Image 1 (cartoon, rainbow, N blue to C red):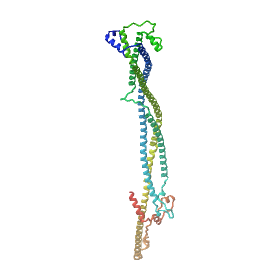
Image 2 (image 1 turned 90 degrees about the vertical axis):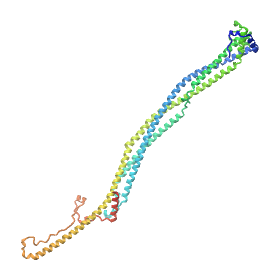
Image 3 (image 1 turned 60 degrees about the horizontal axis):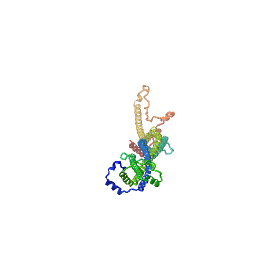
Length: 496
């Protein structure tokens, strides 16, 4: 809207004045109408008051935005670091459990393999009968397994089962702990995902500074527009005061008793020329046509400012919600951090139990199974070699017996020969030799015998029993069947 003319405007040409006067005839009624409209337009001042409140509120929200944005960004970084730390702890527990479980499975496999080979050896002992020739007559059939003490195997088996049970209990406790840890982490991740994050990134910063800048622009433009309405109102008052009957017409039209700048009893305003008055009325008429547009513009600025404030308020509400949610996240992390101490202690107890109990017990079990298997295999081999040894002893005994019989025959022959030779000497020379010439002249030849030397077994020696003769010794070496000895030889060669 145009500003009121200055006195210098009187220099306007006469032709221009006449043209304006002819195009816009001004009546008192027109002036009153314009005055009433201008006065009504000043009611938009409430919009300016509201605009001032909006700017004040927006400025406070702008400051809160800076604080909350910085705070939330810092908390998000802290949360990310804490979550990484918690997940690192969880992965560490997994590594401990995984390494222990992998070694446990391998040792358990080795243990099962050792136990299977031991059972295979024991099965051989169960199936290997003791030759009847080695047992007293009437003795029930026995097998090699009957001569071993299986309490050692049973005791070790029970010990290993108890060890495995302890391991399973420790691992069950660890799994309960890790399940609780996983649940806490899942709840934490779910809460983080549900945090109402503001759409702010490096490429799209906070919209509030831009919104606030736009809001200030609307406030400034609304104030400027309202200032033009005030000037138009002042111009209407001036025009009425320079028009005869203006005050009375205003009072009649509005009910006001006087004009804002004075009344009919006040001193008259400073006179102006008709040309100045016509110029003033021309400006007034032109501005009057824009009053409604200016009022609409102010209202639009007010509406836009309210909208911008709502946008700012929405963003701040989002930041507040984010701040509240992040505060809850920090509390969750603090609680989980307290629980993590227990999870770590459970993992450490599991690992310690493995190193100090389960692992050495399983390794010892594997070694013991191997030792027992080796011992019982040697027992089986020793029995096979015993059969071979018995056969060899019998063979050597028979050979020695034959040699002894042959030697006895030779001794008996030599004795008979000596006896005949002596008899012939006696017949030929006996009559000529006195008996006292040699006391042994008429002695018979000495007789020699080959016989087994009596022997005592170790137990009989301890008990003080008498020695056995040759026949008893011969009977103590059983006669084994040829197939028995051949099978024993096959087993010995297979094990060697």
